[in-house]
Length: 251
Image (tube, rainbow, N blue to C red; front, side, top):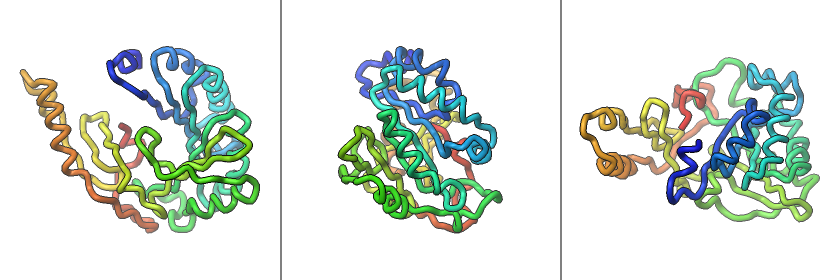
């Protein structure tokens, strides 16, 4: 992070994290140049949190979030994947948690990446429109427009009595592909052009070739952008089109 933070011309250095190590690392990360944190938080109930994350310790994550809010980051956003029958009853509690700390929160429709058997994606799907309707029963939301630039894919809404913004990331119900300006570099050196497709370019042969230059790498990345698909085609079926899981995607 110190090396990335020192890159000339870098406007935003954002880190997405499960928050488990932030109590120890929030301040060093901020000092290294990280400007934005995205922290996963799907539940405020310890047992449910452990069930959803498989290994997570809620108290450890909450301590990390509080350490982050005290460390002077430009922006902190919570990410919550909401599932009907699993944690949908906590949507308002999560908004209130974010409001108490003056940080943003984004609710994400579950993306069908990887084959699972612990729940039915079709039955557990909770749309952004449904969540927004629930939240507006307590809080007045004003749309802030379409996603732009570094704001990411979330469509944000403001509240008149709080600095907290509520966002919705809707890969199913409100496709944002026409606004997407993102690609991902996986740990294997594969440039992934879309989360919902397998379009990619392997950069390893170029990187490993003796005498390869940064200019050649830049040209390969620019050329790869022509492969970025027009849109993805997520469905609610329990048989996913993309077999890789998010934790194998990274980037």
